[in-house]
Length: 103
Image (tube, rainbow, N blue to C red; front, side, top):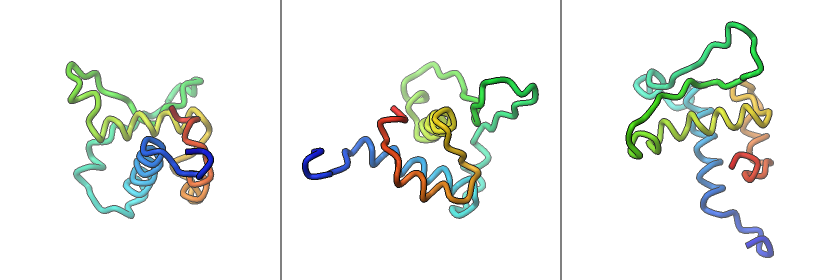
């Protein structure tokens, strides 16, 4: 696939999930119900942990791999790598990135 420069399905899914999360946070996708279900984490003690979202503990695989939980996990991984979801030029940066960094 590298010879033909075809992006794998997994990488396309990661990119589309991050783009959707960005648009959801910036109100480009109007869905207050989904935005309400995101668990933002406020770092009050300025620790090294820079996670944006607080993840819920799930007892089942259905909850663990639900779309909203998957978005929050990817958002945390993107912030660990150095991407800022609240930055305006995030969409341009995410299209340039190699999704292998987020796996």
